[in-house]
Image (cartoon, rainbow over all chains, first blue to last red; front, side):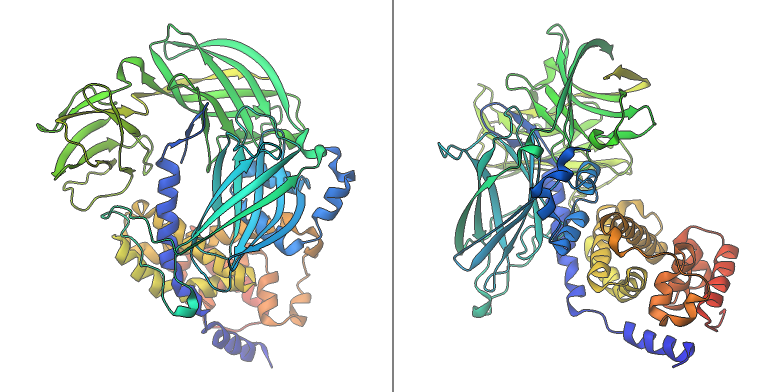
Length: 464
Length: 153
């Protein structure tokens, strides 16, 4: 066959594409919806933390590591899955990964824990859920103490390259130990809810919810399974991490903060701040990066938990960044470019539901419309983008009545164009706050910020 | 562009995206992943597309960048599979599909878009964000290496 014939044959071969390719549109929508939920939803955590949403050592000599690279195809999937997380990518490149290789089957679902990337404060579990019967599931990961079986106060963020509801894809659960050290052993618990009838019954999964126009309604759960794996970690991994005591006071946008410590782990870096009680605003978010002597930059992580809050205030005290752990550098400086505040007198803002008015809203936010449907309310806020084409969440999920009783909003959905709101302007997105079963005329919302300060000159803080 | 229109238009160009990806990456599962990732990235940044008439070249640009990222990570991940860059003579002995994958990236992306995905020189230039003259010279060089005689039209 000459080159021309080869070309014709190749063109013919390329005419056929895999049948499942055309199914990805629904998958994309689901990913996008999940991204929005994960990115813009503040999730309540355990006793201590409020968590704001939306990872060369001598391990080369460890026998655990020696066995870790026996399953190259899975590792290949793992590398692909973590490709947007520079710290985890670096960790895996440096063979900072432990093979687990445990499998259980419960109610026609098989859960297999393949590998972990673990250090002093973060555990990343790579696992699969497979079934010959079911196709769509929800999984909920938690961590138990081996002896007491008490649930540990950790935050969990689940990731996959596909749809988290689909069975069969490699998943990653990132489990942050905000204050506790990583234990030598723990129980990884996974509760799996099956969302579809068995394939053998010929029942298809429920159709997608419309992203913008419909409220999320929980799908019917047709079966459940609970898995518990005892994971035992190689100390060569769980010992890794350094804390640098900085204790540097600085003024930023008229407020006094202290960079107290910087914790550098293989999987992530934490910059920890305290604030002068006399400040008039709480620190809620930072745009920052760290730079070493070689000019390598380590920025805020792009996906996952970006900060940990204080237990007694709205301040976000611990800010997560990519890690220079494997960079083998001896100098590190933190540069703060932008700071987001919540003014202390704006922790709650009043919305008059009857008259459709609100005062003292965060900068760039206006109340666009209030709609009532029985005892349910929908509040539409127009929000000026802080960066082009980027939306952000304005209000938290708590709201209060006139006497201070706390309610939970049914949903806070931001960044999506709502087609039933007219006059969608460029540079503006809408946030919709839905409150159900609310019979008062006034509601107090809890903003996540009140203003953003972009610094003309970055604040430089030497870490080491 | 509304989500429904997006889904319809992506559906129309998906075979072409897949052809581009599989030639670029040489692996069906990676190609599917690249197309999936492209669709997702495009969907979440749809507002960036100010001129809908450039939808396909915009998607292709996202796809090419996604393929490059995947290749970079594969190179990091599996050093055992890496092989030395073949010399010009080596292309003669390779089947066409493999020879395309062994081309230098800057030639490969041009030849795939021009002769396998059916893009014009102008569309290829737009997708790859380069002058049309560069596309023309790279396609000539790629065809020389592949010993292929295809129309310039």
